[in-house]
Length: 258
Image (cartoon, rainbow, N blue to C red; front, side):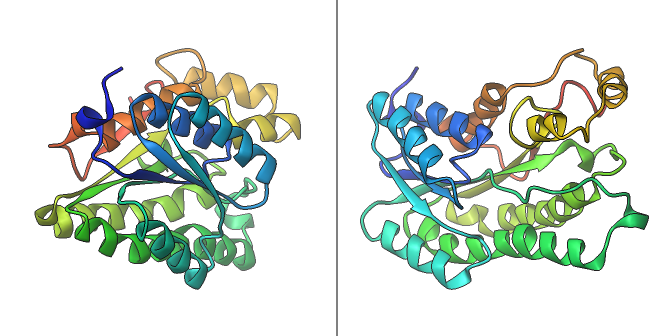
């Protein structure tokens, strides 16, 4: 693994949702690639501490922060305090609402508003708080964890895909408007990843054996993806190895869109 001077400038990567399954894998990969990490969690302080310990075991520093993207003032305070001590060179958004799986016709307005406020408006709050610091630091990178549903509609997944589609428009806008300041913005569109919400939906019976077989039939690679495979894509896009890559969506979906 190459060192920090090659992959990242001096500073810290801010990972929103770093205590989750994919967030933890991303934090570890960032540490292996030579970056210190500041990771946020919403409620699971123990998991956040476990992730921080894994980062530190790899020889990097780690900071854990409790944060909700719906708390605009809290985000700004957290980001300003972090940036006062360390340059923020990367912002990874690996968080998301733990959603149900309704069809559009069955979805309530309350469900719609809750997810849009938490995920879409939360992303906007985060960008507004971090963008001035990335610009002042001479540039940086945003990487958003998105959905393969942007390219091929998965029935029952509107509460995941719809906010991410709007966020993708913001990602494209950041790439276009802020590239002149050395700021890049990209997304990783996920298919079925054997982590996080997928495992919870298997456990509660939402994803049945019939669903599993139907989902596998749509994949070129007849298996589920892993959190480590997602982390590899995220760290590539965040790092200087992707220094001329912006405004892109990298699909990690086993060929779901083909």
